[in-house]
Amino acid sequence: MKKDNDENNVTVKNTVPLIKDLFHIYEKVGEGTFSSVFLATLKLSDGSKKFALKYLVPTRHPEKIERELQCMQQIGGKDYIVGLELCLRSFETVVFVMPYMRHDKFAEYVQDMTVQETKDYMIALLTALRRVHKFNIIHRDVKPSNFLYDRHNKRYLLVDFGLAQEYVVENKSNNLKLLNSEAQVTKRKRSDENSLNVSFNIRKKGTEEKCYCFGKAKVCSLCISRSEQTAPRAGTPGFRAPEVLLKHPSQTPAVDIWASGVMMLCILSGTQPFFHSPDDCTALAEITTIFGSNKMQQCARKLGKKIIFSEDIPGVDIVSLCQKLQKRNKGLLDSNDHNTCEKVSLDAQFPKEAYHFVLGLLDLDYKTRLTADQALNHPFLKL
Ligand code: ADP
Ligand code: MG
Image (tube, rainbow, N blue to C red; front, side, top):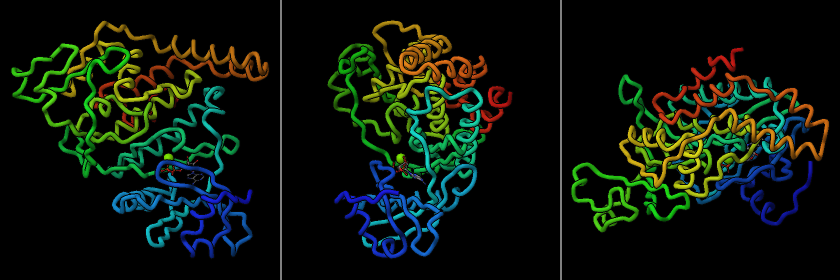
């Protein structure tokens, strides 16, 4: 374990005196928008048990800290979900003490995961999500850096409940409503602002007749004067579900399933990141290139929105797309390492069920998208 002499890290580590009394703190093992995570061992121990100390940024809202804490306390410690050993606070700094798990980088294993390894990985991820969703919680930031994987020891851990939200079932048809949604004001995109000419026009009931820009590549004064639409849009670019991108006000656990589908797509294609999504409009355009403009329009219609495309986009066959991308990556590997290339070609022949599975996770309609439980019973994982 390395000593860490970085000045900033030393300052962070000194903010909670009791932590310094209890732990030897080593190098920084992770960093996100809201935290720095350090490796540590207990001073009064033989040092064999390792801990991850997550120092939250002092500006984090207390309600969000409380929610993250509750999620780890109530849901964690089981089914590949990180548990909490201790939480300490000194003035504005809060530190979560968690069991440490060594893990590999997604970029290092995504290109050569075998079929069986992929099944085990997805089973662990969906088992964790099934448990989270049972507690009426949406994780809202499912992505490889929040699902740790120790390839050598075959261990998995879902971490980071920093964006988690509670939701309630609204009626029997499983229409779920988000509780305490942080409505964020999001900028309305003008149709002519994005490179792929995908324009979308959000209309309120009862004002349609007065709108002069509907279907046109400009925004009329009435639409400009309308109040901006608010919707929760937590998550990471590239992993946001269509209903999040289309600013649907109520979001469900299906947003986590979409994100797990994007992770599966990365594995099937050996490509990461799969979607670059520099902004929500481009993200919609990228999803459209996969599924086609018709399916995207249907998806928007079901959410009470309308997307207008300047041209028809046919969509692609996911099997040949993934195989082409795999081949391209194999080509890259080929020139560097012949052994790795052979391994990929022998082991990474995904059966057709794998593609059916990924399409179930990436169902554009959140109401028919697979649930974690349904996904775990999919033939790809059961075979
Ligand atoms: P943030 O909310 O800032 O994204 P995370 O909880 O996702 O913080 O932690 C950031 C990184 O720290 C993770 O991507 C991971 O690399 C590392 N990390 C977090 N928890 C653990 C843990 N229990 N064991 C090992 N590494 C961890
Ligand atoms: Mg994180």
